[in-house]
Length: 74
Figure 1 (cartoon, one colour):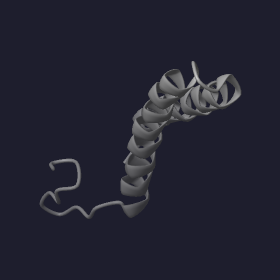
Figure 2: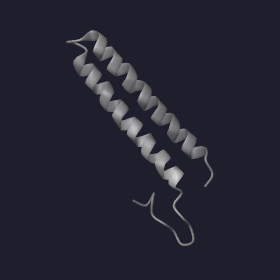
Figure 3: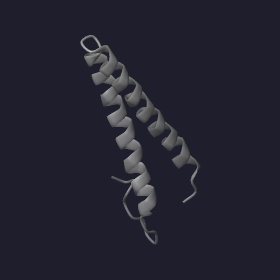
Figure 4: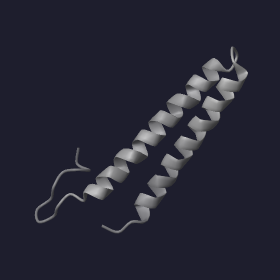
């Protein structure tokens, strides 16, 4: 992946790599929880809404971290 590839004379910033990993983990896990919540909701309304809310919140935080990363200067 070119995101983590070293260029001539530069080092990989580990904190930015961790931020990227956290961002995509939150987005994918949040969207997965959101979809599972939609699937569970007809059988158990409270659990379904909890999963949908938590998943949407996690995905929103992940999308916000993309914005934060775009503002960070290397």
